[in-house]
Structure formats: structure tokens, C-alpha cells
Length: 158
Image 1 (cartoon, rainbow, N blue to C red):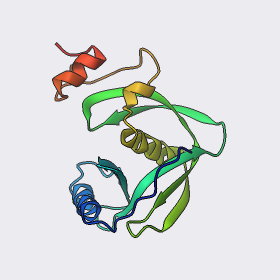
Image 2 (cartoon, rainbow, N blue to C red; image 1 turned 45 degrees about the horizontal axis):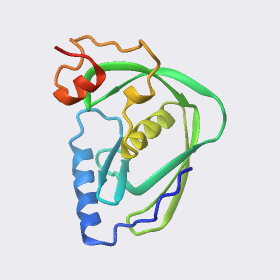
Image 3 (cartoon, rainbow, N blue to C red; image 1 turned 120 degrees about the horizontal axis):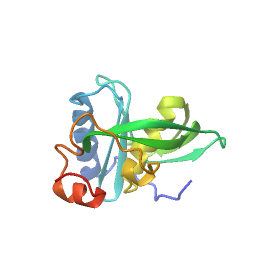
């Protein structure tokens, strides 16, 4: 697991970020139950239902076995795009509560995939950075609705 400086929700800017993240989760168009946002020094992850989201700060994960599964993933950042991504089947996530208390839990299967995907965002990665070659599919022309600079990076679109 990578080392991340501990942060908490005690400072005013982080508390505002955590409030905004809870608000985003309450308006999420899909019930994935996990969202991530990076603001300044803090990386925040909201998990749970839209009504009772738990927010944690600076999450990291480690694989608990070598078992990996390949499955299609989509992302709201790149609408109408699916790619096949290998992910670890079982992981352990470590983070801190907004109050600075350590938190640790295990996830497996689809839930582990979602945590890896969202924590990737916090670390600056997209699913396309982890995808297997030649697995990009879409029911629409590739990247409809995505920012032009992202389409150029992926070499798709017009």
C-alpha cells in the first residue's frame, strides 16, 4: 500500500470538500455507492447508500491474494465507453474518517473492483490506463460527451 500523509476532516477546507462529496453522492445518476474526489491535499471517498454515505479520507488498498478477474468497466468521466480491465478479486482498504480515526475493511468481487477504480481516480489513473489492449467498446460513437482533450489522448472521436 502506498504511503499517504494522514489527513482528516478537521480543517475547514476538508470539511467543505466532504460536505460537497456527500452532496454529489446524493445526486449520483447510478447507484454505484462509491464516489471519489481529490481536493488539494485530501483524497476523499464516499461509500454507502445515497442517504447514509460514509466518507473517508486518503484511502489506499492492497491485494489480499493474487487472484484477478477481467471484466468490462464504464465510467461517468468517459460516457458511453466500456473497456476490459483486470482487477484484484479481494482487497483491503485503509483510510481515515473525517475525524482522523483509522478505518480498515475488506472488499471482494464487484465491490473490490469499484474501490480499485475509484482509488485509481484519486491517484490520477483512468480505466483506460489499466485496460487490456483492443477492448474498447461503445453503443455510441466512442467518447460522446467526453472532453475533447481526453478524446485526443485516447485517439478516439472525430
